[in-house]
Length: 474
Image (cartoon, rainbow, N blue to C red):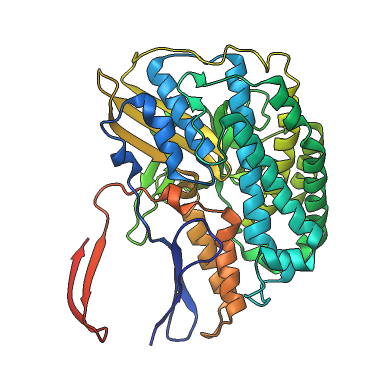
């Protein structure tokens, strides 16, 4: 008889999900899925609210990446207002977003994934955590904590709160940077540089030990999407989107926020509350693509900072074209962090960074607006429609995790087929299947936004577990 292996919950993720692996009668893997089992309706919650409240409301979607939601939301509101924010406000937002990227990547790499990389996929689950990392390699544990503290301290310094800051508003930011805060942030840089260099050096020493995982952790040709500047350098806050194919050829370029929904569609599958994004001209699932650190490094021609540029050149030696294995999200995440630290230092040297003009004001000038930014996990898009009074009548969010959703499911299936044989598996094998998902660092709280008529199954069980009644909505 066929058999289903269920991993519930998937551990060391942000949010709630499970994996199911379907075996045939011979014990071989036939199919596998990553299920996002929670649902949240922030688009619907926002209807009827004044548009200028949206950044603050949208920041509540996530406690890990609220800044990205703040920025994408504010940019959508600015499209409705038809305003261009001041230069200094744009620079301060960029610094805030980079600080969030550093702290979020530190959480993903050190807290959630480094236990597998340092202690091993088959290590004791009781020790496979940050405390186990700190015990086995104290300097690595300290580096992870230090890098997360670096990012959160900057967020708190600029936005007054480490989580859900309200400092980013439509038109800019609420207050300028002071000389004292600038100098305090500059003082954090030496430790941050030391920590990220330590992490990069350690990762490069151990990466080849995971050759088997590299080969089957979502390692397949795909499209990649990410923001770049006009000089083809990496970008997190402004710029436009580029989509490339598996050979590195440009499929679409210069995609602005207003054009995003013209070229990107969203599909629904019955096993997940997270949507599946795809490039419309190719259809679904052929037009599925990947976003995030791996995509950003595959797309960018340069980082725009000297140390990160050297790391990017080394990273691109991993493959003749775009790097395909999602195991290398770990490597790309570290390069992202180095870039973020360098770019923050560059921004603080801007002669206008202490300028007091940090906000533009206007009312409703358009009935619709969209904004996009790079969240730590990849491209994030907010799209709003308003009535003549500026109240939200419709909203849609396209989250990085949804854009990676098809690739995560393909990766789970690829790894399960490789490691599960003859119906036999160990805890370590199932941990490897989970680890595929962790390479993407999905944020399930952000991404679980239903569209259309979602499938629903309600079961009434007796005390002994017998199904008494069942209602299915297809």
